[in-house]
Image (cartoon, rainbow, N blue to C red; front, top):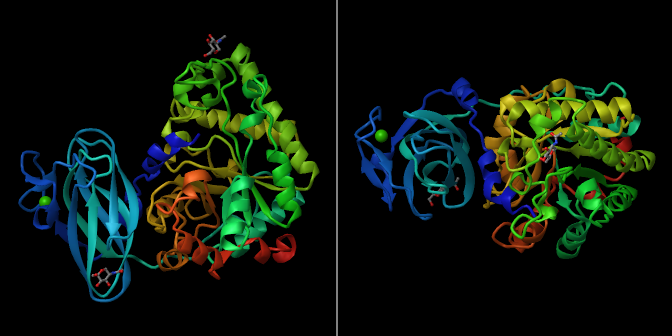
Length: 470
Ligand SMILES: *[C@@H]1O[C@H](CO)[C@@H](O)[C@H](O)[C@H]1NC(C)=O
Ligand SMILES: *[C@@H]1O[C@H](CO)[C@@H](O)[C@H](O)[C@H]1NC(C)=O
Ligand SMILES: [Ca+2]
């Protein structure tokens, strides 16, 4: 169901050039043409390179450049990549010492330009940094590293964006703020997979993720039922925290073909529903259907509110990827839809148990500090890395005034790396099926070690969280 999230989710790493540029000091440059090349070649036809050339020919998954980078002590560095994206927007993978991986988006460019590649923790002596193909078809001029400046203290907004937020939501937000930078909450999507985690590692995730997908009217009218609300209430009853996503099946315009069945109707590819057209005129029949759907989900949110369950609520997720219809027409209609749902649920329906979780990284998609409480992104890289490039991009997006969450992951970040990189994700939520139950993403011993690490909070360790920050 999230296959496309996986293929394209990695593209969510967006450039945080300002972040790196602001911090750059003593940059050491490593020319690609002087590094160890595997399956790639030195070229010179694209002008503007540094040194004696650049490296191209990333056309095979295993193609890579291996840089040997020296450090005089163990410390954190900001990595930059100088590249040209003359064949369009691509993604590359940065691999530190053959283990920690970070996916970095390379926007389309007509000339060489520099992009932030996140941070790398280099040990004293020689370290290796690989630039591995991933989407391929880009040109690499050099990489550079410069010691990271220490992260200044966070400056998290003390109150929720909704002035009428209820005591449950406020307590949840204050609890999250109280652990921010000290711990990470463990999380798992889907009650079945949360149970699986409990059986495998002997610890239960603190956060349960549920999906309101099957309450979408265009699915209900085709016979779907859901226990997402019951699952959420049950987890809250055990002292847990709940996060909610909504794969909103388009209200109408589902192709419903063999390739694009009605139950894929949240994908852009499965519907011709046009969010920009629907929002352009409030008397339009499709605007009415949008409202119908928002109101249908309000019924479910109210059940949670009535059960005193506050929610980390993440609608319109991964919008900037464009693979879901709410992001298919660019940032403006998406932001308008966000403002509409925010207003309708809070002000019209009086739903005040929500902590609003925004899930895109790019600044032009961000609806604003006044309608978001947590910034988040979804990352499906393997390697259990700290996802520091994405974390730093979200710090920049919210100017470090918002909590930051890894709302969907494949590979869970290693706690030691999170601390070393100061990547203070306040929770992670692993997706189900092959992401949690697959050694490629999370080896069984690694999963056990993560869930038993002191830095990682599990259900037993968050009991009484409502009163913890009072
Ligand atoms: C990376 O690998 C090199 C060589 O194996 C080793 O000397 C270095 O300590 C490693 N660095 C990290 C951060 O693991
Ligand atoms: C509503 O959306 C459907 C599906 O995209 C489209 O066929 C129809 O023309 C739209 N209706 C209006 C009034 O725009
Ligand atoms: Ca070069």
